[in-house]
Image (cartoon, rainbow, N blue to C red; front, top):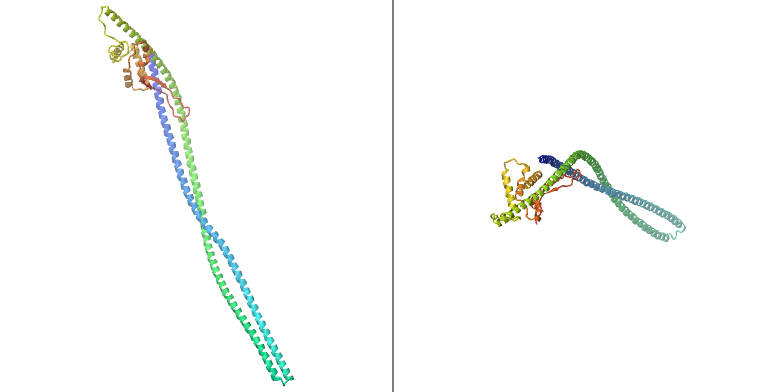
Length: 456
């Protein structure tokens, strides 16, 4: 009785100690899973938020880049215009220089021709006056010296003067032609001068327009540069603000992560304590299990010995009755088999089953003393107690025990009666999983379950 009480107390302590850590372990597992899921969701939200912000900043940056590209294109056009302006100004200066050179040459030619014409005219007039004077003097002297041949000489002189006058007229005509040609050249030069002056005025007007356009473009460039500087400052300010905000959010996230890490460390410490407690419970459970297995093995051996003894006594009594019946002292007894046979109607194992049923029906509503139980009943009690410790369905377990087959009759099969008479679903195996030493791994407790062997 004391042994039974001690066994019951150990069983209750083991069951209570196992139930409390298992519930606590399940709660801690669930809390750890919830914390991990919450941390993953927060990290995902932060990553999505930062990704969206980076995408918006990239879109703004691309927009600024396009605007800067337009500004650079306009600056390139302005630079090209400045380069063309320098070339046009140089061409205009060259044109002015050529016009001034041609005007100066024209003036020099006109002055030189006029001077030459006047000099030639004066020279001819002087020559004509000198000749007239000389001829007058000569005619006067000859008229004085030769008064008789005056008419003939005057006629000759007149002919000669007429020839000289004709020659002078030809020279005057040629000079007139030269003068007309010079006047035509002068007219052409004046027309070229007017054309050049028109071109100069047109170029000056074009340059004025270009200067006005350059002023407008420079003003526009200044505005664009100011806008670009303003946009750059705004972009830098926005970038700094976003960086500051991201830094603050990152710090907040780091603080939250540290809190979660501290919480995880605390949970890990609790899990380690639970592991130690579970290991202690496992050790105690293993000791209790070894005790029960030893008790079951002892009961099995006792059952084998008891059944062998009962079968020997029944067989001896049967043979004695047969001998007495053969001697004519008594009637022949009913035929009885001493081997396990399903078709047998009168077997020694049937007697055992009937005795078992009658005993259980008798003690159904009475208090039971374990010392009054047979070895088979003690084995059944131990197995029911073991199944209750493991949380097995007792109704199904009792049903499995009820359909247990009797032991075979021969000596060779009697040695295996302790195992073959036990239903396949009632074989116990202790499976102990290795406890993970990592704080983040899930705690797996060992459990004892029913092992169903494969039937051949």
